[in-house]
Image (cartoon, rainbow, N blue to C red; front, side):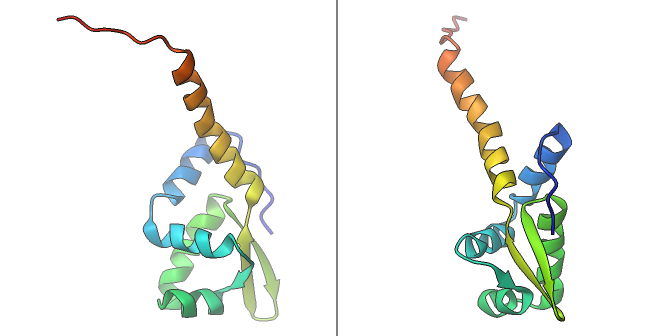
Length: 107
């Protein structure tokens, strides 16, 4: 199970890079409702396990999913604290934009 918390610039970068692929976004959307095993994900997404494994590894390395081994299957679930950390990181920019006065450029 992945429990590493996102709190460094490098971990934010890994997290956002992991979110830059449409298949990984689909995986996260599926995991938002429940834990799924690799076999279920390959069936739902209709992709080979080898392709899915690459994307799941990327999500694991970015600490965006948790894993649980049961027998020969690995089950995946969202690592919600780290998803929230990414959201909070982005929200600081929204807050700073509100506090930055508009500048009018005249050329």
